Length: 67
Image (cartoon, rainbow, N blue to C red; front, side, top):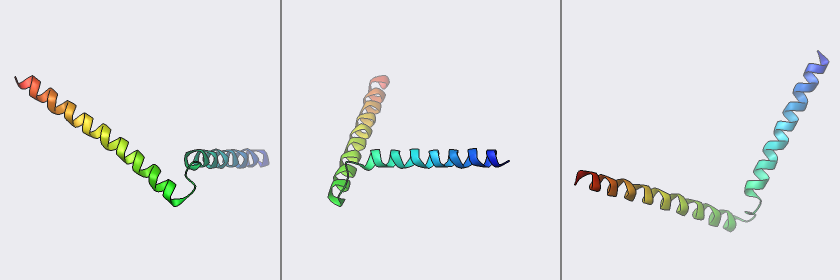
């Protein structure tokens, strides 16, 4: 019984360590508030660009199929 509890505890510790490492890797370049904001704006700009391209693609496809 003690071995099972120890294995569960070790698994939880490994999971927490992996989660902390992932957070550090994703947020490592962003140390200051300005850098975090800049990173956020760049990500949003990229997402908006992709969204615009998809909308234009659908509009052009719809126009060409109705001809």
